Image 1 (tube, one colour):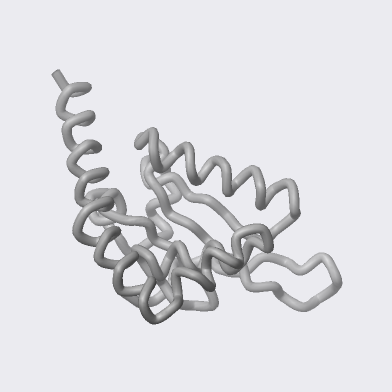
Image 2 (tube, one colour):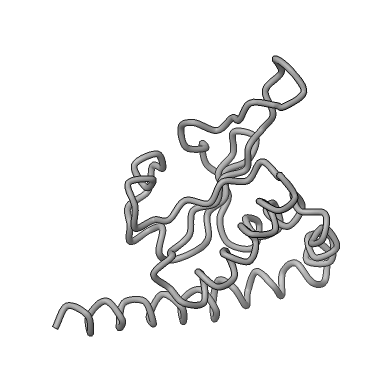
Length: 142
């Protein structure tokens, strides 16, 4: 899925006047699985001074994205170079921006691996994590 990226997609380059493209990740910090994984990536990006911003969909940062909270809770979204991608393509963009994980971006792009990983994410993992999120929200509302 590719759409227009949210507003505020550039970060100043430390080398001068030029602007570096920033990768922005939208994730659900209330989801223990999502938060664990994205916190790990955020720490890695921070430690290595990578231009990656992590937005929690439960914060006012969601306003920058042209998505509802429910849409955003259903899958991972990443904005990069003016494009908004979701699902496995979003993970692949994120991994490609982090030297330690570039191999994972390459492997998940292989012709045999890509359709399998997309199917697993779209049909199994994302729906399962979303249903878990809905149940957690319902329990906390009671």
